[in-house]
Length: 301
View 1 (tube, one colour):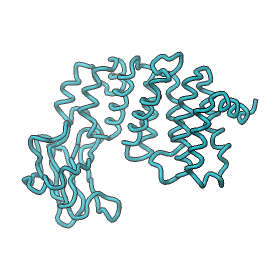
View 2: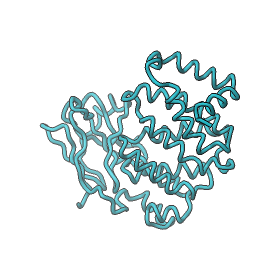
View 3: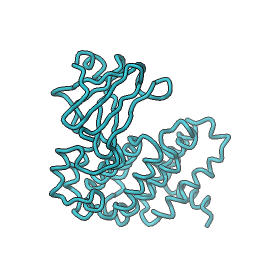
View 4: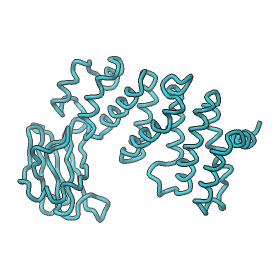
């Protein structure tokens, strides 16, 4: 049977929910008349049908979700945060969780997909998203609870460079099997506490580097930034330092796996009254009056 016929029968069977959703979606995108919408939907459906045909309710939920997210992503092309093909591929990775409702039943699927895609969007570029998906594909079969899936996602994001995820990743790592922790971090569970206390516990690739840049070229700073100490209200795993350019404030995160600036609108006025500081127990930061960059290095490196 041709996939176009299969799709038509599927939509007919699932009337009126899917057909009404499809009509609404197509009406909201005038450009759709210029594109091969049937072809786009058939591509989406054929991939989902091949993987999830034995789980009809999950297939229905995925296709409904796909019409709302995948097709708009195709239509918007460069405007979307996540490439449509990457979204589709990420859903197909979920088969081990859905098969025989091992972890994901149809009623849990929509909420799970929102969290799954949010985790992807937090990653700064498609190269890192690709690496994250590779990690998830490799280790998902070791997860026996949904909480472990999200713990694995945080851990993978952290070791790929999201330094702001360190504390949350290491705290939720207690949920993961000993074998998985050993494969990802090369330590035993007993070493997690020390890793939480010391941002340079792991021999990662980041020892020193440059971060920031001029806003006119896509960086975060309008003016050369200063570095200030944030006491008492710092985010978990933050260095306790804020990079500020009199217009915007960013929490500075740095550890074995990377260095990151995370924007916080609450710092807009707060940071102006903070004392300047260029070091912590673990970190040294150099600012230059003629540069929009910060030079960050591990103390003692």
